Image (tube, rainbow, N blue to C red; front, side, top):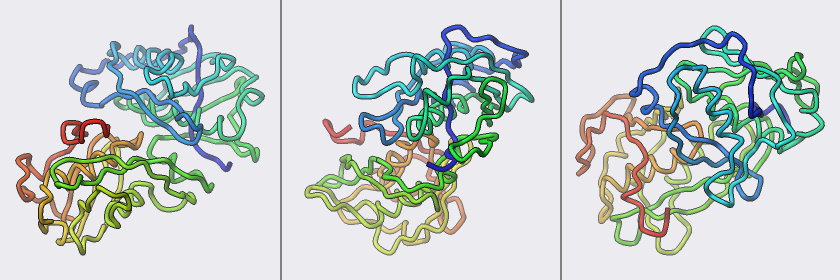
Length: 309
């Protein structure tokens, strides 16, 4: 695999060197929507579980999340990405927005290929949730970490991981469509063949536009809808549609349409919220939806059909 940016760290007891002690408010921490990331049962992708941190400073949060990554997932089919044999010599937060992690010399022998890529990804996704922490830099035994081709990996951030893989892989995603009555959502497991170009968010939305192939599911996107742009920054996915998205689909509620997109995108490890634009402009209302259409939408579990979550 080419240079995928992800990271692997561990250490029950971690040596902290010069860590920044910036304190974060409870609101700042809670609004981040923390998750701990793991590897799925097929060792092909990344999954997550919600997590409520106790720490408030950058130092405390880094240490706490590193320990959490070492613990067994609640879901028994998930796998923690960091092997017991992989440890961290030390780490340091510098310039408030970068974290340097220095692994023991056995890193390369213990982690190679896909396990290496997925393991590092879980670390980056998990730690870059800390407010103000944007980048992770990896060292091995004090030297810059290199990929399988001998190239230095360099600074990594969560938003860049998928687009920078430069590899072909099946990316497992969950897409939410309308049920037969158009009142709730049903989940559909799907594999997207990703070549390393474009955006995974765009592929998910285009799959929603194309509609379901399974029996008992209905379209949620109005006919003629075109995706004009989609980009993710700091955990927020900004989605821009043409005017046709404002059309009503008979027997499908506006909430079902919106949350089919939101719930599908929030399954991605780098997305926590979604904001919608129409022709690059915010609109105040959408069909029968009671929430302001120009706000930020988070995952809605109540609208998912029971047994489909």
